[in-house]
Image (cartoon, rainbow, N blue to C red; front, side, top):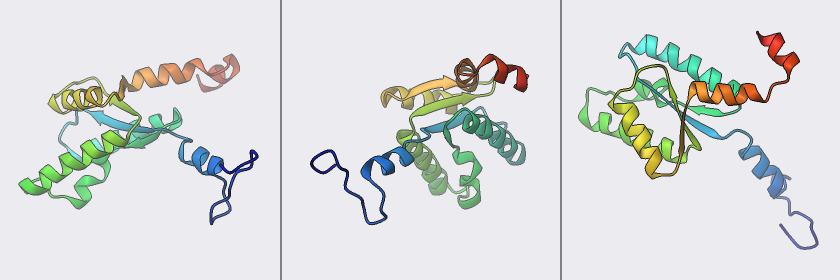
Length: 144
């Protein structure tokens, strides 16, 4: 911000407030689940989870949807890179969303990492419940 309450526009003509509001519109939500190991089924389920999280007002981040396309998990170095990339994405996220019913070591590790970084961990059901509280009665009846 520059003096006298006026904001300075950047080279694209956007003010600092406009840039901030654009970048902060949807907080990042890291998606984790106890994946089955079937890459096709896991990708379909991850996409469904991401859609629900998106509809709840977040920008979903799910490494499972793209890392298998660029990394070979059978190569130890690339497997480790995938873990490192996932942890870096979790660090940048505002919330960890645990989806599905099962809990495995990957989820436990994600929750522990989120805890160390003071990142809120919740369930998909928790996010959808909170999101549903903001709906009016008419909106609830339309969706149900």
